[in-house]
Image 1 (cartoon, each protein chain N blue to C red):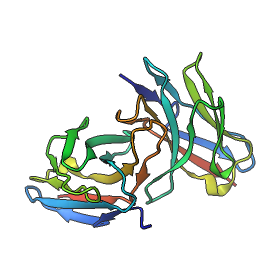
Image 2 (cartoon, rainbow over the protein chains, first blue to last red; image 1 turned 45 degrees about the vertical axis):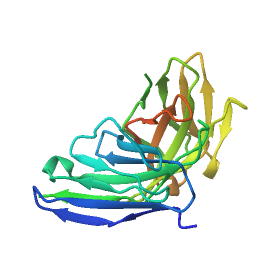
Image 3 (cartoon, each protein chain N blue to C red; image 1 turned 60 degrees about the vertical axis):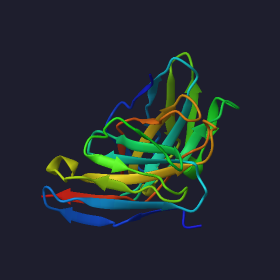
Image 4 (cartoon, helix red, strand yellow; image 1 turned 30 degrees about the horizontal axis):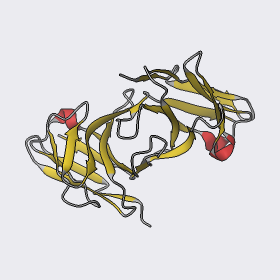
Length: 114
Length: 113
């Protein structure tokens, strides 16, 4: 199993540009999430999905859009990039409804917005 | 609502010394608790998790954590630090199966030779 994969690993955007961060998992996990990691702030949840066709907002959703058309894929779209979106983005997935199930994280995408 | 507090954003220990990373949580119901580790330029990986089977939980790489309900704590320890333990450690809490996970702000562990 490849686990959780993310592309690209690095990206530089100009203010106002849009792009999509890709995330895929091959573990048939129902639950997928997007986080951003900023120094001193830990991981903050952007959007999450509990299954194909079902998404919801996390604590910092503004400026981001998601969709979940398949169990495997959960892309994150930046609609109009801003310097405040410079961050490291992590996708994660986990199985089922048990609270004990841990999350599996991708390697991250380091995004810089100029 | 749930929250997690990690005391100390940076902790330095000498190689061979005890590692103690603190985590306190706030929750209205018994929580699910996790510790994750992040090595430089990598994603997070699970170190250990509390499953209610025992209050002392053993994880990978010699780490363990003790759940203390009365103190609402889940501190991470390791008897003897290795250079390879240098990383950032995150405590996380979740209230239920489909509930969102809340992460602490992380503690960077430096191991001094």
